[in-house]
Length: 591
Image (cartoon, rainbow, N blue to C red; front, side, top):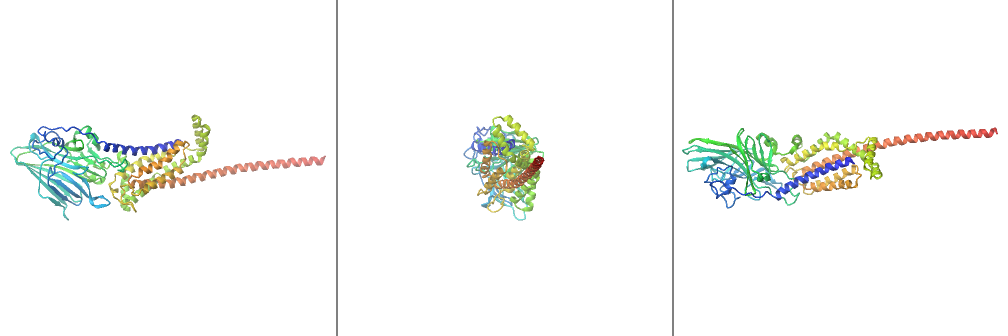
């Protein structure tokens, strides 16, 4: 009974974990944070958007008002940039990176020629990268509302060309000029940005650069489970004190961040992809967050003030990563950036599992088969623990009729019932916890592998076989979830039935509950569960048969022993009878 309770608790804990995760994200999407009042900065009362979108209060009075409403994004000429990895657009208003399509990551299997749009400035979800300069004492400086002039309207990385520079110019009547240069490199998702100040004015210029992301929360899915497995979408920062810290949209709305950081980075992440501003090593920046109009969220960083003397030039350099969550690439880009591949608290287990998964894939060339072989290796690693568990279950199953009889006999006296049960366990040398403890030891590995399969962008649009063309989306025909439900049902039939009828009904309902949940899980994750359950069934069946066979042999020996004793006693009685009859006959003859 205790074994069944622990198994039931472990299963229910997993169900509650999945339901709670989906409910939290669903509530966040369904009830976004309330709109906050928009504050204005001195000299910008007519344009509250400028005040709230720029860091600090040093907003130039000459900044132009853009758009008709507080959420409007200004737009000018678009500069098209095409590389081997990017299909991007830079707007001349602010020199913002407004649209980025990832050419090596199609939008869907059905649209292989349509790049996935990571950054966009239109539609239901907005996600853009902005940068600019803020000067002291209201002196001129181009922020992300300033109009720039491009040198060309279209740039393309030619064959044999490894670097592509895109330049935009801003000129002030005082003689101050800023050249904003984006540098794209072949085979790299990392973009270099330099804002060069050419001070042709008569006085020194003092100012700092800022870099930020603006985005709206993801749209609400059509149903509670309709979006499949839900992962974190929102802001993330890294500091020397906190290597990886999530700042949700709700947290930004409740309290704005203002923190001085040396090193680190800021990012906006989502499932499989991210954008991250990365300062130079050793640079000190002020990290900040803001809310614009109640539904536009900003996370950014502002550097220290630099002085550019009259007649001199000054460079403000930074880097921008826009692309997939490739842990090995991110690790080489910035310290701790690989943590955006978020495995949760079990990263120390998940990372070796992912390394092993990649190694198997390098041999087999198919992520589905890699998952299958990884599952087999994990099963072999825990073979002895599983064997102990299944042997205990088999013994418990053997004792099930006796436990049912004891429950009927002592059902009203729980103390007596427990005493008799413990005596039975001791007599039969059965550990009631032996079936559950080995399973509990394996749970952290299973959860870590769950996050590996959920977070790995390598599984996105990776085909397996037959009808499964994308391991990262649910099985379109629900075949794998139904097979998984059947395997769970078979496992229950091989396990001892709980003496308590209520527990038995709950256990019988679990395969249905899990099948319903897994209908919306990624096919790669369901494949793992199907293979794991199938191997468990095979192992459990073999061990159960061995235990039952061993029990039959012992019983046969026991019965043979009893039969021998009975035959021996019968033989003695027969001899006594013969002797008695012989004595009686001899007595009659004497008479």
